[in-house]
Amino acid sequence: MLFNSYVFLFLFLPVTLVGFHLIGEKGYHKVAISWLVGASLFFYGWWNPAYLGLILGSILFNYSVGFSLLGKPHKLTLFLGIAGNLGVLGYFKYANFFVDNINVLTSNNIIFEQIILPLGISFFTFQQITYLIDAYSGETREYNFLHYCLFVVFFPQLIAGPIVHHKEMLPQFAKDALYGLKSSNLAIGFTIFIIGLFKKVVLADGIAAYATPVFTVAEHGIYLTFFEAWSGALAYSFQLYFDFSGYSDMAIGLARMFGITLPFNFLSPYKANNIAVFWRRWHITLSRLIKDYLFNPIALSLTRYALIKNYSSVSLFILTILLPIMFSYFWVGLWHGAGWNFILFGLAHGTYIVIYSVWVKIKKKIPAERAIRSTVVANLIGRTITFLAVVLSFVLFRAESMDGASNMLTAMLGGHGLSLSPLLIGKIGNVEQWLLEYGVVFHGMFHNNAFGENPKLGITWVMALLLASMFLPNTQQLLHRYRPALETYEKELPRLRHRWIEWRPTIPWAFFTFIIFIICILSLTQTSEFLYFQF
Image (tube, rainbow, N blue to C red; front, side, top):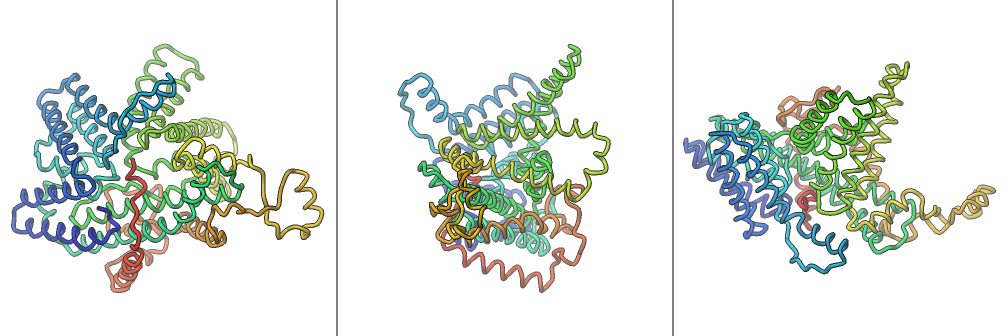
């Protein structure tokens, strides 16, 4: 069941919402939680009822292990719990990938049935692994089974996040204020949801019509032009941006309608002026999980070891920065998918982070660094470099094969030459001969027709979404005064200078939201899945 479908909007959501609050208002809080757990399981089972047993088994297994760890923390119990989770995840998500690579390396023909990836398995698996680790560390004391079930299966964030932490969610379920429909929560939640729905069905799905054909052509081995490749890569970058941003908003908005506040998972990452800030704003909860449960423990252990051994500064850098970063981002890439393109995506971003870390150290030795780092020009350069590096990496993220990714990247880096419009022939004087001497041809900037029949319209879409992602306020800023999510990011993105732009529960805002909702409903003629559902 998709958030952007009629059955969800006009049947599942209103029935689930009204039922939960009506039951809760009568004081039957356990029944209300049970109702929401049941609805969430129905939502998950809508995709494939066969996998209901998987998620229920995962809940029972992890709750039992967690309960054991709360009673008597033991490393073996924790190890078996984590191994069990990773074993199930590895089978469903990576078994085919592993067997395929074994066949290539050994020239064997091991036949392994194609495994269908259960939706959201990466999200609910890692969410429960963190619960086990915290139970072992004594950071949680939750014994309520119903609350734990809702923590895992709450439908707004079940399929594609955010990856919530138990200490963020479980205390909310125990509050009496949660039960009973409140007009403020309904207005705030509905507004956020509609903003997200608009991003998905209008913006992301609209630009997808220009991104998909380019990558399809690349997969068929057709040499793309420089402009086709870049246009397709930019189009996909904005498709992914507004698709993921839209889902994140919808998840937060839906949860708020039930009186539950989720953490932000997306915060205008294309406004980042360096790659470190990008990852603090893109898939925030995944970055947090990797940092807290992977990078920090590894970096701390290696730092202690390096200091004991009294290593040189270069060795110290390799052990405490290079290795932890590359190892962490290797897993970031593998988390996103079972394919070498995803692994290379993660390693590319690990390399970006390492380069940025080196640059930070170099900058400290530049006398004028403090004077130039806050200038508009410096920020613009940093934002441009970061954005272009991310766009290049998203080619690996989107491509269906390494050959397709190689075709795209080669064209983007000028490997297929440069083709300009034939309308320029005879109109640019001596420059034409000079360009010809350097291998430039005049066959057309989009002569493969990969970017659609009307490239100008596609370019208009790309430019419009570029401006929107770079300069328009985000949900956090629009609804700042109502604290739409758990965290605030005042340092990252301060409040809007013109406060009148911020959302208020007024008639003009209600009318504007209603118009956006109507536009979204009219755009639901062809529903499409969210891109992060595949992870």
